Image 1 (cartoon, rainbow, N blue to C red):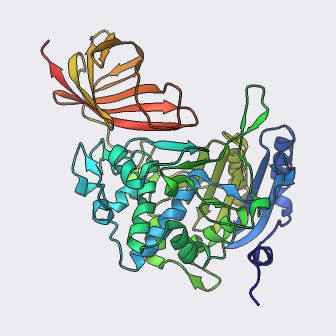
Image 2 (image 1 turned 90 degrees about the vertical axis):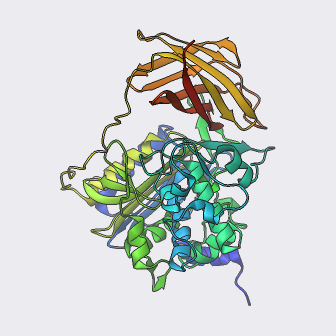
Image 3 (image 1 turned 135 degrees about the vertical axis):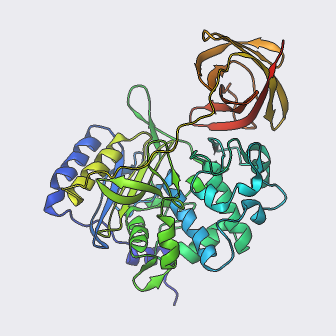
Length: 482
């Protein structure tokens, strides 16, 4: 007789495990924070020498039902989804079905990525996965009553490089939405099914998917934002046009198994999901941020707690998460919460790191990326367009050497706020109307981020609305003699 899924989950689930004595102060700090209303709940797991030594939940997973949080409570992960998505991509790489250094367009359908700087062929799978494909900032939440467009339509609207691929690190959620789409197209199966069959189920991550698995609804957390009075307000459910970047749900105990598999070079309990080569490739730093850290394939790579580590954090409406693994000792930590901006998550992660590594090594000196040499005065009159998906929008800027600037938006005067002018760069908020698609009735804030490229100012116009979206459009202006 088949075992019902809910019973199977109960048999496999790790449940909470008591904290060793050295974690007593951290545990008390969490209890104090939850009592003080810093978060509705927090769940964590600590791995030492590839074994879970502490897993526990604090507070309530759902304020309305008063369901206690445990290490098996199911949390929305936000950007901690990215290394899971990347693991699925590397399964395809191990099978010879994708080449990380091939153009992503090789694996896409009718809609293709395009490059306004550099070439689309330079927008490889690896550069999507390490945030160097040249794609600008993007996030897009679709609340109840609205649905994301097709991935092809999202790529047509926002799938472009605004900076030369390979030149610099620029965080991109859409890149990971494209990677989950590539996984789906190459595997010829829905992303949910591919990830379940090839990553979650082999690792016995029975509480992990891109939605709350059927039968686990009583274990799912609700998401909360604090209002101005500090009271927690439930966040309405939402979806994304970048599921691979943000949409995965999981538990602290499931993520402990995921981290152990990565610490053991792709295997756990005798089951291998990735080759040793691919697992190590994921945590090899192949791009650098301005602060000296960087990314591998899906992982942030750099020191944490004074140790070499691979990690990722996440934050969005009603979610704050963080995971880190330390290959040298096969140690890991996982901290999850169901509120936005939960500083307690990062506080706990730092405290756990200090306990795991009480004598941290000095951070190694990391070579910094070379300074941007594309400088020059941005003073003058510049005319051109914003390449918006609904049609090109005329834009003109007049920038004075003294720092004053004026704008024409749709050939009418438009106010500029908070202009920032420095050699080779110009940024400002601009007052104007812009279509952002269905489901948003307000007026987005519009911000220009431009740099001088010879006799051009190029970059992006970002339309932003808190807890809703950040949508970028290409901008190209040329110096005018007027």
